[in-house]
Image (cartoon, rainbow over all chains, first blue to last red; front, top):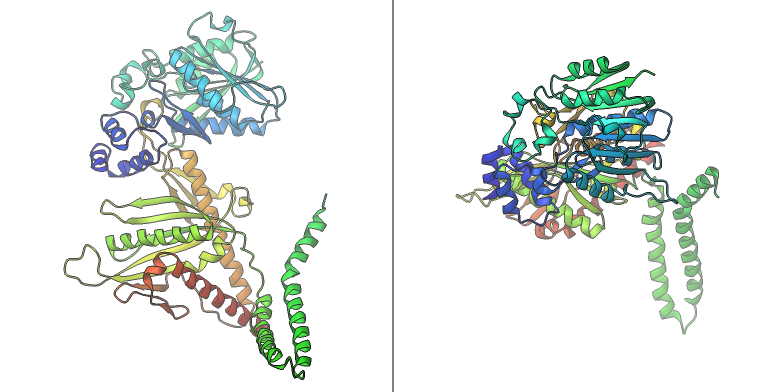
Length: 276
Length: 335
């Protein structure tokens, strides 16, 4: 029986939950096939083809990184912060956008007509998925008559020193968000199978110490004219990286910073505010 | 555009409509009776008039007996509310869970007939069949008023399908019916965010990119009352949190309604029979095909019909009538 197979793999508690989710899924695949894929180690989110993220449903396709609850948590908190400030036009840049979940949620929850968001990802799979999600969330194209927030993704590598001069980019930006690859080499080999064998290594591996992408983002912060006065840079970090990431930003530019905890009380997000 | 005062006045007018309707009916019936009485002396029309006279007298009596008292019952302040029903299996192990599954079906059928939108929010099934506990949302005006008297312990007496020796078991299912508070409806009045502790329930190791297992369970604690709500049926924390806040708001609303009722009662001298949720309210006896509601002493000898929803309606109507009558008695004793 399917449920028994699942329980043997995941434990009774998790199996019961996931079995219900599969039964409720809109996916056309037969239940026993979904169970077989899950038992073989595939992440549930890829089998279901979608993941809720705040009030949105994000379309998913391997190997694009699956949105995590930690990311959902800080993105919602960022929305609260932005909503508390007087409403203004915001140019948002999301580095390593993946499914596009972060800018999509910002666009969805902030006042219509106030956000223009750009996503960047090195993977063509991610760029096309993020643009599909923008269409599905009704955030793809502008309409002169209805104020609307817009999100669009392009393929590019922000590790490239010439990235700020990319013609498709339109600095200055007000918000930079990023959930960059942050798994170090030592950690990478120990990742669970469902992560290592299914999700894009390019979305996970952050260089030997896991911090390469933060150095690149800190360099962007130092680029003249890349950010507007009052801009915020919000980056997700791995377990135990927060203080080192903070130092990277402080040594690259004149900034103030703070750290947010995730729901599991891990230092998960570094918020950097350049001083102009 | 209507001003707030206009709306208030219209609402008042609307609320007095039943009084006007009852009075008009009374006046019209009395007038018809007077005219008919005159005809009783007419030799040609006498027999026909006598029939009408009897009928109209009966109508008048009926108006005095049922219509007028009904006006006195204060309109329900919860008439528009939807409801949230929690079912938990009690004594009796898997047999209680089997019966819980059947009760769930009973209420879902009732919802269909009553045109409420039912949504099973939580349902924890067992491998052996049956449901250990469940939470169901019934959306539609009047769902709370109709169902709230279902709160209490329901007892089933029967030979379980799994029982070899043919012995009759007694098992119970506890039902709690809460008013459903919509997110938009002044939840702020019920709690302050500072009083709520939000916890995630399972360890996640390094978390973040290192883990892609779905861990979405959330638990809320309302510190002043100690009420806790745990939710894990949805795939995201955000959704579970929303659900949990909804259940919490319903529980707090329920406590508020109970408190208000107590205050009203305390202002009167009488002691009203309290409806404790741990009280056994109804027995479903399969051998005798009998369902008895212990609060009103009503037995129906058609258990099948109750489980199909129709018979249940009979109980709900009788309970509602009993409730209104006791409200009336309360008011009479007040003077």
